[in-house]
Amino acid sequence: MTEQFAVPNERRENQRFKLSVPLTVMVEGREVSAYTRDMSNRGVFFYLAIADGTLLDREFEFVAELPPEITLSTYCHIRCRGRTVRTEEISINLTGVAAEILNYSILRESASTA
Image (cartoon, rainbow, N blue to C red):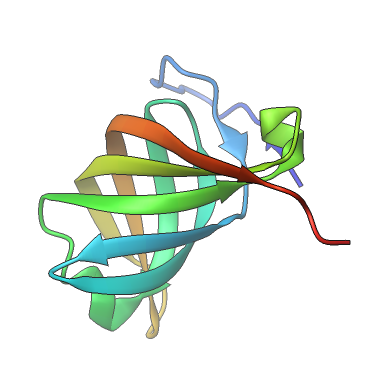
């Protein structure tokens, strides 16, 4: 599920992981479901419904569920404060959002249900 990948002429300084995990974005008193394309310790790219993409104009909060492959232990939820860097219309129904992670905290660890 996770893999590091290199992009020609890459300008990012931090290692990115191709990672599809669920996100819950909190904006304007709402919780919006999304999922990631890739993540690093400083940024994230995620997808959400195109109608919800217009809500993300500056800073926002989100919660991500990181799998054991990343945490090297159990599933872990992290709460992040982010800032939108850019948005992309991916399809008629989907918006891509690139965001800088400003800070984060670990919420809890939970056991995986098999």
